[in-house]
Length: 312
Image (cartoon, rainbow, N blue to C red):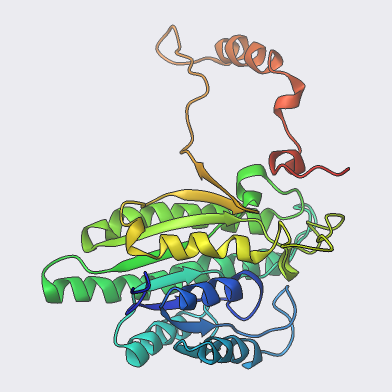
């Protein structure tokens, strides 16, 4: 019996540790040949000397299990390096079929204290990094589609965050980047559907070095699989990368601890029409102020409540 991703090749960025590592191992377990990309900096803020170690270790782990893997240490936030990453998959495995964008850094600060560099660096790695790899993968699939005069196989899985959905007071750069990734995903999904390519985004919740502060106080159990283990997220990525998910496109899914939630697009909560040619301040005050005053105070949830995290 063949594996669902047999004969396909994949790129996973940020795959040297945490979520990316679990995703790369899962794609390989399902039969894909994997390019393991990781810039290898030790600091979760993108600090420290870049190293080939993390990517090489995961690639070696895949090969030791009988799979095919190539380590790549390029910086996905750099346009030419992202191009070389996609080229490396094509040169090594003949084509690229799956792109999983996971690479990211954190530089947390309240909005009134954040520096320009802290803002730019997080937007660059997360949002620009997602765009860079997507741009070259999309061009590859478009060229292949033109060559065969029909659709080809292509899957993009992007990594957003519940910080975008619920807000995160100390992460304005991160939340903005993750919201931008959702916009990039839906635009890409519409643009590439005719070529046979799907693009979806996930909001994973997992215990990694990126989230060690978020989950402080929610310790891993002494026995059994940690509810916040990255291994809970990886199977969804494998599914979205597979032929079975051909009709899943432009979607946002929250995943953690054995749970997957499908997020609907924003809906209109209430609608008000002016009784004259256009609204005046007084008319808006008479309509909107009572509307918000009537809402229960509990409707404005703290981020932890929205995420379903409760401290005992």
